[in-house]
Image (tube, rainbow, N blue to C red; front, side, top):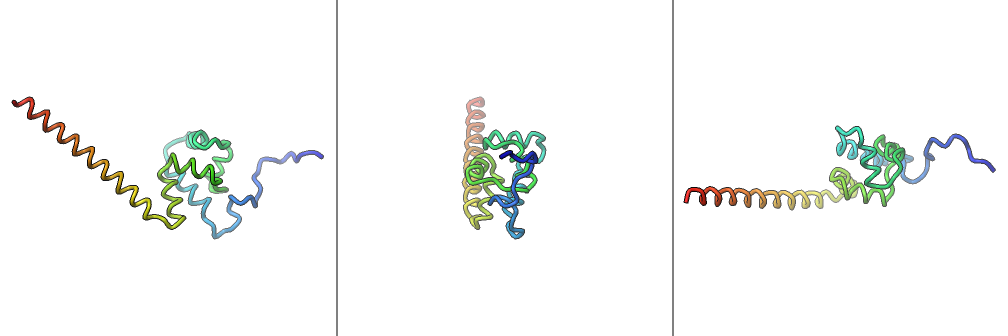
Length: 128
């Protein structure tokens, strides 16, 4: 038994692709990846390093031909807020993303207030 010489394409029905036209999973993840790496020519290499996936596989994710498997999706969400937000939106859990953004905003405000207070105390020490 010999292997086919035309091994350049993914199977059409592998559970991760766009076999169902109504399923926008692959397209949504592709859009999130492109938003994450809009200016990066090395986007596929970066994402491949995050996930351990083959670069050709990652290029298919960027093109929306196929979506990542569960393990790869977890790795993408760990590194990309865009992918995480898209996943939560697809799962109908946008409220979790809002809560995460609110927490991040609160942290940023606290850091800013600390910096302002430090600047004020430095200014008072110089005057005194």
